[in-house]
Image 1: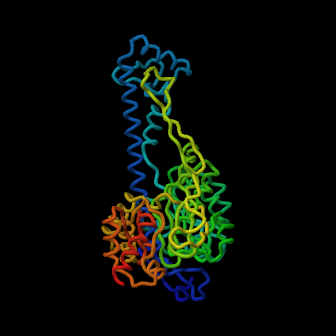
Image 2: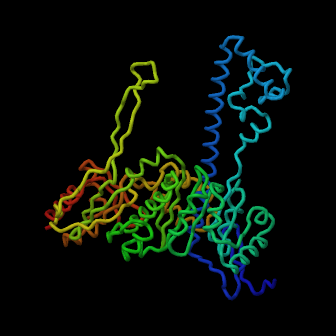
Image 3: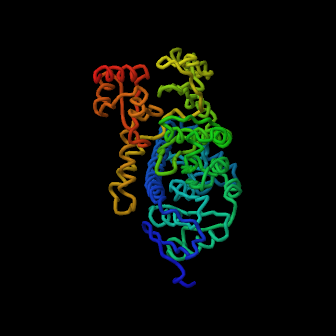
Length: 496
């Protein structure tokens, strides 16, 4: 290999070789994407550790409770334990090494009920949390996979896939160029990502989808290859489709009809989340968004995947249709479903005061709007369904921001991603979509009040308001549209 034919590109701690012919795609502007993905991945590893410790603590508490119950049990009940162990060819399932081993009453052998917890060698292995495995489904030059391997501490194997031969050759060349650490952690395969993910169900703790265009064709297989509690990182660059430019195409790809509103950037995020949830539900799984970002020309979502047929039933409560007035900026959300909780007596419990809560799921009430807009008299366009539940986990956002600020020298795009994360941390998490103050004034054909004045008016009316990272002019508020228009009418009277 002649290095004179290549240009060395360094990003973070990784270096790649770019051929003079530029045969393999490299997107320089995606450094923001890669930086924020590394920050989220670091936080995921820390949260994963904390959750593992909590699970172990619960198991130990449960085990201690069982031990105390056995201590209080009659002596004859304890003496029966070795007899059951003798039935297993003279070998016990616990810490006892043979048929002649006595069962200590101070530390009884508990593996007859849960054998997997008492074999010394296996118990110690299960207490250790394995390093997370990462799958990059569309690797191209392999820069992202290399940065994960070299910059994220305690990461395990990173598998980079591509179905282009030149890309896989470039990726393997870059792996070798980055030294022993990269060579020991990163491996590249020439294969179709969808086939590979379908043939490795629930094997990866992190799956990264960063396609050129829409990720819709990869979502079904990606959902299946993520382990329970794992992280799916997904990018979509087909913003023209998601933002209402081609509504029929968006419906075909994502199962949702977009509307042309000032909130189109956030709408794109919520359409993508609803689509991922739809794919997850087919396998009795559901998503929990931890961070959703709109930057530059793309959107990027980070969601955790869990399996639960019971929790999956809550999906209609997290989705809504949108009614957007064609004459003004008024919009209203129509939930797809609703639930009714009832408490009934628990027949299995002897306590007469014990009651069990049952949940009944029903279609949402509607319509939430009249035929004509109450503010301007025009008709409504209807879109959706979209994800109307929170798109960020504020605890995660704060943890990611702290990590980024403490390691600013390791993030090439520190200024940009720290600004975005700071704005997200200040957003109202439970308010879908947003308003544009300039657009409100354009409807009324009046000059715009200052943002501080408008915010003060909303706060004085008893409602909350915040900015949004998706638009510098956007304002999120839980105030009804009637209150917003009342404030604007008062402003028009005041300035006239």
